[in-house]
Amino acid sequence: MKIIMLGAPGAGKGTQAKMLSEKFNIPHISTGDIFRANIKNNTELGKKAKTYMDQGLLVPDELVVDLVVDRVKQEDCTKGYILDGFPRTIPQAEALDKALAALSDKVDFAVDVEVPDENIVKRMSGRRACLKCGATYHLEHIPPKQEGICDTCGSELVLRDDDKPETVLKRLGVYHEQTQPLIDYYKKAGILLEVDGTVDMKVVFDNIVSAVTK
Ligand code: ADP
Ligand code: AMP
Image 1 (spheres, protein in one colour):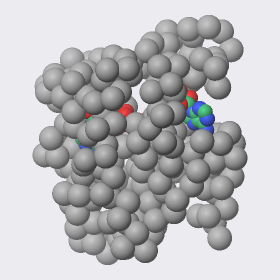
Image 2 (image 1 turned 180 degrees about the vertical axis):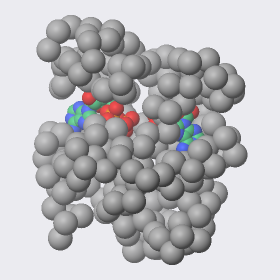
Image 3 (image 1 turned 30 degrees about the vertical axis):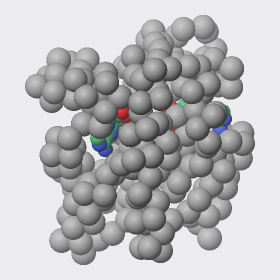
Image 4 (image 1 turned 120 degrees about the horizontal axis):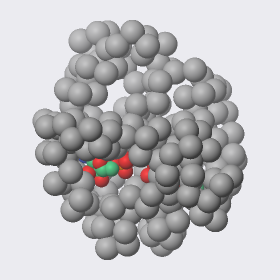
């Protein structure tokens, strides 16, 4: 099963992608996590990506597309994968379609997790992330067992630089301009599933699972 997660920053794509990845036993591929790991390891890609991410802008397509296309060709992706945060532009979606078509393959579902802008800033200021393993928490909705510490790997949890309110507003603007057109793109392709992302995360999850296994 090959699934793309769509939705505004903070809509819950990563939260759902992780649960889906565990349920279907397929990799969760988050381009944001890949960039953050590169930033942490101070790689050339990380240095380049950081200049865009810190401003709430998208990293240029040419730095993202090959990375994802190479990743989905790896052995562990043969049964499927969950793409979280990619594609984010029409050229990225077209490049993915083209690369998959060359392998006689295609995406099965694009899941749009719908959350209005008003809820997003609040969600993002409460998000706490583990930069080591990629786990995500929320101070109110999904708190870690021990304050400030990742349940999964014991590392320190942080407020991402790009989750500060002024950057979130910028990212929302970028989302509406560059990423939202993908909803129409996948609707036309006949693979769009729209789910309400404002309800409890377990309910969101059940709704996605029932739609993709119908
Ligand atoms: P995205 O990957 O779309 O940027 P995340 O999955 O990181 O979003 O979720 C953003 C924040 O909202 C996190 O702090 C997460 O714990 C929280 N969250 C995710 N889903 C829900 C939900 N259904 N209700 C409330 N909070 C949620
Ligand atoms: P995320 O963790 O998905 O919220 O991504 C964090 C940041 O990484 C985004 O605001 C972008 O700057 C960058 N990024 C992640 N995925 C992509 C992508 N597919 N295209 C361009 N930039 C991306």
